Amino acid sequence: MASQPSVQFIDAALFCTSPFALSYADPYQKWLIREHLLSLLQYFPSLNLSMDTFFHNDGTTVNILKATGDLQVSRSTPKVHLTIWLHQNYPHIAPIVFVSPTSTCPIHRDHPFVDPNSGATTSPYLLSWLYPRSNLLDLVQNLVNLFSHNHPFAYNSAFSSLSHPSKREALDRLSCMLHYDVAAIRAETEEEIEGLLALQFEMVKRVDIATSMMIGLEHEEKNLKRRAMDLTDEADVLMNWLGGEEIEEEEAFEVVDKESSVMLDSLAADMSLEDLIYALDKAVERGVVDFDVYISQVRKLAREQFVHRALVVKLEGSVM
Image 1 (cartoon, rainbow, N blue to C red):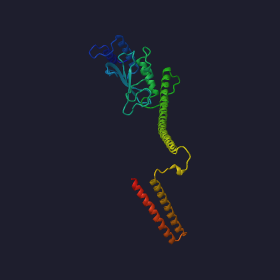
Image 2 (image 1 turned 60 degrees about the vertical axis):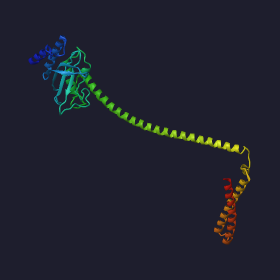
Image 3 (image 1 turned 180 degrees about the horizontal axis):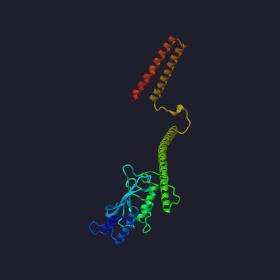
Image 4 (image 1 turned 180 degrees about the vertical axis):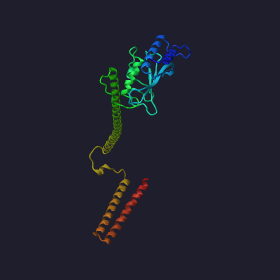
């Protein structure tokens, strides 16, 4: 049975009418809370009761009861320090439970039911809370069993083997195993996703390169088509200029006047004499022609070439 001081504290806290009264408004609710707290302290006398202000996530504050203390969940593991807040709508709303780490025993970062940052506890019993089936004493007993199998301060994947586990204990074990299985699958999935993202990035890069090459080839194809059309047009112009008939090369170019004819003849003679002088140079190098004969012929050809070049210069001057 709960100690007399604990009973006196509960009665004074629940039925106080001062400005510091708790946020439990319904008289029947207060009697239920009193009954549940007395049952809890009877089995867990190490818990201490107090009143305090609780801050909800939406910013509202309430004055409610809380039970704090250390629970010895097994002989071979450290004690677990709990803080259990009784919600202002308890027992219809589940209590709010926190695990407090110590300097030597931090909360395991991969624990399935305890948040490593805040210590908030979301056990299956709390998640499935339903009054009157659920109550404060059964909650703490469930936490003791749960933490004995999976301590919040130490990773332990091997559960204690019980010959006849209860349905609740079996569900808790299953929840733990499912949590670790999901964590392992999530890690493998994330690794696979990273690999697929890297492959996708490489494929996108290759697609960009191929697209750039295709654009370059299309531009080149357009340029070639345009060049082919230009050549076709130039060929049509040339065919039209030639009259579309087969004619001799000499007939394709017609001199328009006498001066042009004389200039064309002089240019042709100049080029012929230049070729002849070049041939004499090669003949002298090979020893086919004597040097004296070479000098005599070159002088003669040079004078003739000079005449033709002078005539070309004269005709060009008259044209300009």
